[in-house]
Image (cartoon, rainbow, N blue to C red; front, side):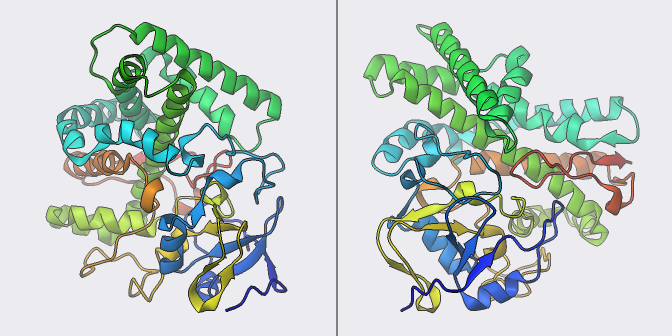
Amino acid sequence: MTTDTSDIVEYPFVKHDDLTVDPRYSELQRRGPIRARLPYGEPCWIATRYDDVKTVYGDRRFGKALVVGRDMPRMWPTRVGDDPTLLANMDPPKHTRLRRLTSGAFAPGQIRNLRGWVEGLVDEHLDHLVAAGQPADFISLYSFTFPLHVITGILGVPEANAPAFKGWIDEMIAPDSSPEVREHAHETVTEFIKGLIAERRGEASDDLFSILVRARDDEDRLNEDELVSLCMSLFLGGFETTAAQLGSTVYTLMTHRHLWQELLEEPALLPAALEELWRWIPSFRYGQAVPLSRWAYEDVELSGGVVIPAGAPVVPEHQVANRDESVFPHGWELDFHRVDPQPHLSLAWGAHRCMGAHLAHLEVEATLTKLLQRFPTLELAVPAEDVKWSQSTFLRSAAELPLAW
């Protein structure tokens, strides 16, 4: 076993905002967990092997609650994401209790019941794309508006308030937001949600938000602060990741035309293709996955006999683990014909696995199904190297994606 900290790597290597994954991560996987220093915050460990990342996500010897008050490793000067009231920063048993109140609404059976509604929204938003004329920007006209419509509909946020609500959330989590802007946005969102709580009290609506309000009022399981926190967590988890994945999925298929053609010729490949795209597409910009960090509650041995000491932060680089060739043969390649592939880790693992995973899968599946049916000749309207990538979020996302058909 070793806890040697003499070899601390400056991290990340090279800034990539597009979907490029630095090939030097293959060498990191061969070495096992490494000590690293990001531009700000305390040194941390980087886990890149599939089994190590799965352990960091799923083993209860690692947790999230220790982030509060720590000088968390990060890419920006100010700390973001260490709010102790957010579901993502809680550990059992508190996390278990709050998660149980919402997870039923996102169970596979419940999500299947939403399919007709979601497919209707897909057609509605694709109609808007067509009406805009060619070339049409898929990002502004679809990949942000569609999942925003879905999650605000599920939470019961009035459609007219959805853009403002998203804007406040963006200000809360943007790495370049000042503390003053972030605090003001947090206060604004809090008051907005409290207003929705007041409106829902006594109503018989069956949307998720109303169910949560009744759980608080009737069974005293949620206090108002917990309810506000849950709504913020559900919005963050139910919108941003899906929006980025939609844009990146279309970009990937447009730049791998043979795979788009495979899906046109063999639609039955779509379920396997979706899993492969989730595996292969890197979701976080380099160094920006630190909000997913876990802290060791005790000494934990990972691969190669490396011991993560108690109290140390570990960044689980799932987008590298998803290419671990000891688990996914030729893992750096896209392959819709993998035999018995292992589950990808793009939506985390264990207690903190994205509760909206089934909803996100439905949104991407419904979108691709309709795109293949309605726009078989879909293509990028600009060269791939001219696609602009977002600089304002933690996630890898095209800022604009002009399409023609």
